[in-house]
Amino acid sequence: MVTLVTGATGTTGRRVVAALEADGVTVRRASRSASGFDWADPTTHDAAFDGADALYLMAPVGEADPLPVVGPVLRRALERGLRRVVLLSSSLIEPSSTGYGGLATLVREAPEWTVLRPSWFAQNFTGDHAVAAGVRAGRVVTATGRGRVPFVDADDIAAVAAVAVQGGAPGEQLITGPAALSYDEACDVAAEVVGHPVEHLSVSFGEFVDHQVAAGLPRPMAEVLAGLDELIAASAEDRITDVVERVTGRPPRPLDTVLRAALA
Ligand SMILES: NC(=O)c1ccc[n+]([C@@H]2O[C@H](COP(=O)([O-])OP(=O)(O)OC[C@H]3O[C@@H](n4cnc5c(N)ncnc54)[C@H](OP(=O)(O)O)[C@@H]3O)[C@@H](O)[C@H]2O)c1
Image 1 (tube, protein in one colour):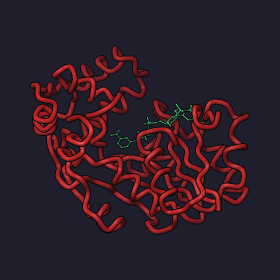
Image 2: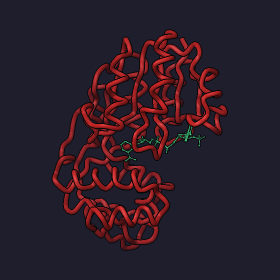
Image 3: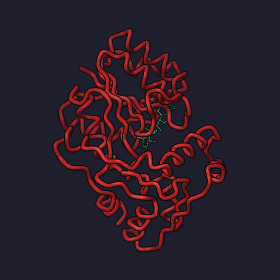
Image 4: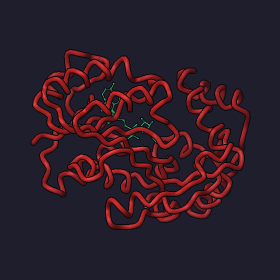
């Protein structure tokens, strides 16, 4: 059995690799830096996908609609014996929506499939993410208003993914942390950990799109992210599930624990 992990150097992918290897699973890593695999270069696809039985699928980052790039590769791999596909999607992306939703629909054609729908990552407050840059600068900009988000630890997402890749968590899995917090509250948590004030500034949809385009994001992707913020503002993400505990046997880590471990 060979398990292909795409995005193998990323926030979730490297944790999925570690969790699978700890379980004794044979992992093939795919990313530009890990193996030369590039979604944008079809000549690199067969070497990654040939002979893979199971797949952790992380679609190209920054593509508002990954289906045109990922669809042909995935269809071909399914024709050639790929059996189980675990897609990293997002909590607010419904299978019926365009873009990522289209990819989730295709994944359901695999003999065995899981669609992981995690909420927003606690790790957005650390590392390279725009929110983390905002924490360092003392001001996080969103269009989420007072909407709440059940921030979830990427280690917990990877733990669920590793079980799913081994066939133990089929179907849709809506993955959340243990508590839903507004960005005002989350910024207070971050401020306490980093030891300086962190303000949350909530702006309009249009202002947030412009803010992200100015930071270097392509406009279609900025519009997707601003749309998700609007849904958060309308309370669509104010929910928690028991998926982490049910699938992994241990409770999800709260935001302050994750931030203390990473930032303090
Ligand atoms: N952040 C959140 O709050 C959140 C919440 C829910 C869902 N999500 C979803 O999570 C996904 C991001 O996952 P992540 O944080 O694990 O990713 P990430 O940390 O951004 O890592 C991206 C990975 O993809 C690889 N990669 C980038 N471009 C590539 C290309 N052209 N060809 C092949 N590989 C490429 C990178 O490695 P190389 O550079 O070596 O190629 C890296 O391993 C997004 O799809 C997002 O929708 C995020």
